[in-house]
Length: 138
Image (cartoon, rainbow, N blue to C red):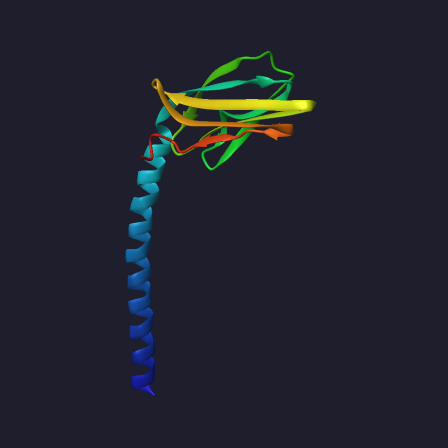
């Protein structure tokens, strides 16, 4: 019976030691992510096209992995907006257009003069989305 108790106690001790080492590794990873999240970067969104009804975009609010979506209805084109984002938050802009004659949308995301993402779409209803990975992560 004593041998069984000792074996169980040893197994629990090994499990606790493994958990503690795992938590230390996780803690270090969380610290690295937190450091990256504290950095900011600035991007410029550009939208062009015809009859764009709305534009949704990450404006910098919210959490890095749950950004707050901001919207503009009936924007004057061409539309540009410069925003400051945090850490691993992706840059994203999504214009939407609908026109029986043929809708057209194009979007572009730039960072320090470099194009991170560029897309276009056309048709009866068009939604052109540009999503770019944070330059801080790469």
